[in-house]
Length: 171
Image 1 (cartoon, rainbow, N blue to C red):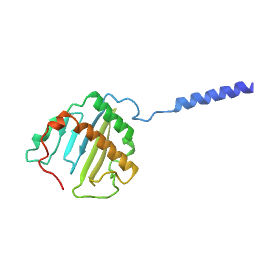
Image 2: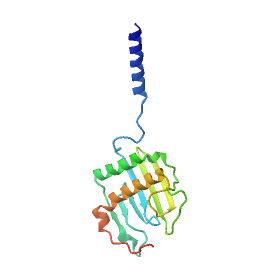
Image 3: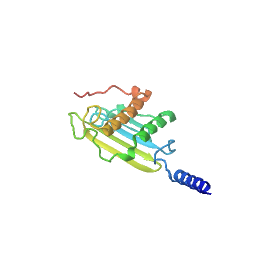
Image 4: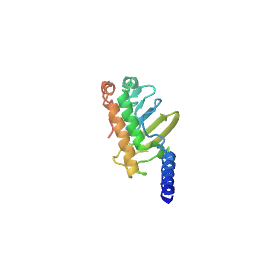
């Protein structure tokens, strides 16, 4: 009788444990309505918005319109970016974030990563941060690596490569 009771109790705990476990909010397959936008580069001159497809190589040009095109990411590219953002755990970052904990450079850069996941909007703003690499903390490093990975996907497209070279370069 004791063995049956112990077995029943163990089974009950297993059922309760499995029933109470919940996956993280953003974990798993890419939501159908996932969208993101990213601003990056020196002074934040480059940007991409997946909802509209608007890709801007630079806003710092004599004729800025020459540096704008439309980019429709493939489903595979978008899924890869979703995975980068999901792995980052964007919900664990503050809206205002400095990956370098106050270290500055001149010129500086601005990064703004925004997402729409299941209708919920989230934005992380890194304004006037250092151009340095790596970040001051593991969290800062993870954020900068994720942004770099997303930028690499965008900049590897034919649409990005079709835009003219930068008119102005920074020291």
